Amino acid sequence: MPRPDELPTATNFVRELVIADNESGTFGGRVQTRFPPEPNGYLHIGHAKAITVDFGIAAEFDGVCNLRFDDTNPDTEDTSYVDGIIADLAWLGFPIEGEPLYASDYFEQLYDWAELLITKGLAYVDEQDGETISAQRGGYGNAGIESPHRSRPVDENLDLFRKMRAGEFGEGSAVLRAKIDMQHENMQLRDPVMYRIRGVHHHRTGALWNIYPTYDWAHGQSDAIEGVTHSLCTLEFDSHRALYDWYLAQLPLPFEAPRQTEFARLELTHTVTSKRRLAKLVEDGTVDGWDDPRMPTLRGLRRRGYPASAIREFCNFIGVSRTNSRHQIELLESFVRTELNRTALRRMAVLRPLKVVVTDWPTDAAGEPVVEMVELANNPENPDDGTRMVPFSGVFHIEQDDFMAEPPPKYFRLSPGREVRLRGAYFVTATGFDTDGDGNVVEVQVVHDPETRGGNAPDGRKVKSTMHWVSAAHAVDATVALYDRLFSAEIPGEATGEAFDDLNADSREVLTGAKLEPALADARPGQVVQFERLGYFAVDTDGPALFHRTVGLRDEWANIQKRS
RNA sequence: UGGGGUGUGGUGUAAUUGGUAACACAGCAGUUUCUGGUACUGUCAUUCGGGGUUCGAGUCCCUGCACCCCAGCCA
Image 1 (spheres, rainbow, N blue to C red):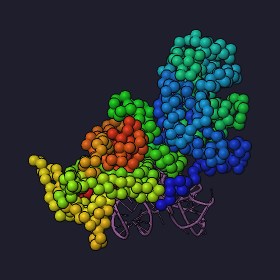
Image 2: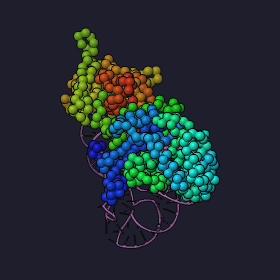
Image 3: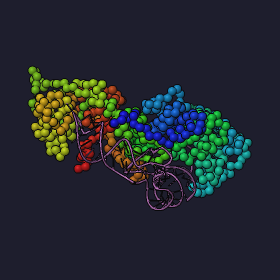
Image 4: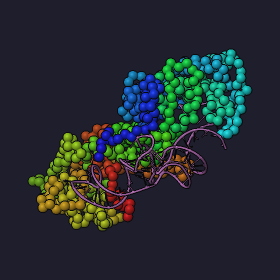
């Protein structure tokens, strides 16, 4: 199978567009993009796609991609998000050099340009309230009504606008509007608001400004100031493009006007990515925080153990199109498995322990059970990772799932009278078992074949199953958190219209009695290892007393059970 | 309701720009295997519906249909 970084990257319409621009010399062969998050939340998997597209296109054509914070709305923005976004970006593999850019750095230029529009008779101050303005905008197919202030003289507009800036008007008492066309079929062009009055503290400009530009007035102009050529954004801005172009056409730009191109945002099954919903999950305590391993945030995925490279490869692979779609989260998981299969060290851990006693196990001179060390590969996919020694003795734990008193067809694991292999150790055969009052198996007795030491039978006989195990006397205790989809429905909210109706109440199962092989005591925070036959598990930030299941292994037995 | 956008297998993305549907995931059937993992092999669509142009259409034309976006002083 081709390694992820060798997988063919399909072309896409954005790349084709840039190539065409370069051939026609539209931007003089220059390519510049930008990634423009608003600092009011943390980055999530959807941003990861935008990031790989924005940075990827720039890199591919030897251009630059700047990180620019779109901090035009002080109501919700905060420096802590700025720092968080920069950190997440670096983790994903896109460290920024030097200082990031901010739309707020251009407030003065934006203001000057606004006065220019007023002077040209293309903008006016409107003192009507929001509801009135909204009502006058009309509706789809319905006429708009012009504001009574629409035709006030330039001087009056200028005077009013300067007073807005000076803080002489109260919050919400006036706005600056572009004078375009109240009958336009594109609602975005029905005299959009350019500035609103806000009396709140801005995370960078403090109390300097009383007025703040809207997204539409700030974004294209910021692109132009920076020399962006290809302004890539998501589909919902399609109807804003006409406005983007209109503003730019009225201004004396230092560069050729940038051009906006929209593509579909990334949606995943069983996942929500709207900031509002993610914030609510945190606020309601449904999850532990923005970095809860169940969150689709970059910090959540990171804590869960998702390798940044796997996320990048996934984003590169899914392509860029204009089709609204939702990718199966299984595809992302397959990229995670592919990467982890190559890189994760193998270890043995028993999540739900069942005690097994080897009744014919030898004792030493002191009458203690003999302890043998068996050698196991750290990663069969990568011999360079070497081997480790694991203690084996007469009492050990296996997975409760790995023994059945009455095995169904196709069940290959341990059951009375059946012989299986303990990975790297011995062939054992079950001779008996004990149950508690409820009929649960609480102990299994086995006999071992000394000839099979190391895991192979000299007579060449085969067993159907190889199982993992952990010596009881040497086991390290740990807690393991198993995760399932946060939302049980493929499309959260599809049935009822409310995503939270589809919350999976069992998205986390915490197992406190897990038994680990000794080597795991040295696992580093954040390290991801494979628990053999179970899946990949990430060491918690606080150390190996807690593991998070990143993703399970593909499970043929589970499929067989599902079918019957 | 006006405008804009999008329809290719179960899912997502391709198709040398009119030349006989590719890749991945999922599924199914096998091979290999000291992980029921990995790896490998095979199998799984005629391109939203209906017309038309053409030797030839996923690509062009006509006509329906479905879904998404736009009426924040959010981005």
